[in-house]
Image 1 (spheres, helix red, strand yellow):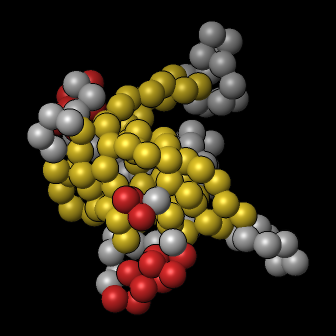
Image 2 (cartoon, rainbow, N blue to C red; image 1 turned 90 degrees about the vertical axis):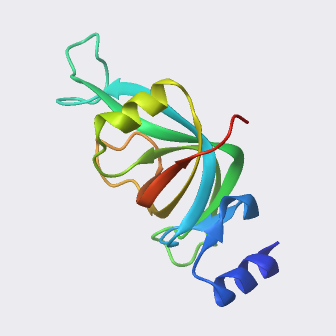
Length: 140
């Protein structure tokens, strides 16, 4: 599988989610899955909406299959770390159209860059920064 992924990366900058393996920083990855809205606690403590934290509703992609994400730990003596992931938060702002699509749990294909969370506003370990259009797929 790694050999296939390396060949794919050498021959093209686009990586498909069907390969089921990405690395942090991969560009123009192609994802398929369902758009969903999830609400999590936000400021000031990011712990509990019931205890006074603001609610944050964001757009997420639930991938059709778990994807293996490779990332390096800060300790260079350690082997690279991998994690199986099915839920990705989107980076960036979206207009109301995407939220309407997400409420219907539509199946989509999209291209995006993969990055690791770095903020309390990020509620998944890995996020997708979409590039271009999100394509609605025929009913799956």
